[in-house]
Amino acid sequence: MHLCYVSDLTLADVSNLVRLYTNDTTRKYLGGPLEVSLAQTRAHADINTPSKLPIWAIRSSTDHNFLGIISLDTHHDGSDIEVSYELLPEYMGYGYATQALEFVLNYSFNELNLKKVIAETQTQNKASIKLLERVGMVFEKSVERFGSNQSIFFITSHQYIDKHK
Image (cartoon, rainbow, N blue to C red; front, side):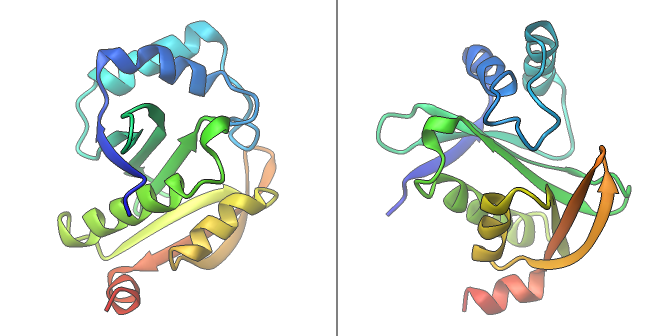
């Protein structure tokens, strides 16, 4: 059963993106909430700036409501591709992030032909770590970044294919 799907961001998503980027709960492990003006600038940039790698809205399959975002981007190390996600707090814990992450991993390996995808999360973010493990990602290493201990997880195309046989 599909709880959600991903789609391109549109101008209609600006207010929801601002709500996402300024939310204390959503941004707890992401450096804190952004100021509204910065969130508006980022929302417009996310929608209007062409990128080689996608950023999608996560939407409810039943009512098409905006739930959050999920994206692929170049990691801070400059070589790996990282998956990132943010959900509005009222949609956390219902399986939406799991389904969106599964879609993006499938897309990464079967459409983009990536060999590996990583994710970085604060080590204190236990819910995110459980999510990454649930979809088959494996702990690789810890790093100190942004003033906090971060955990780096990865999954290779071979691991993903083996998991989904």
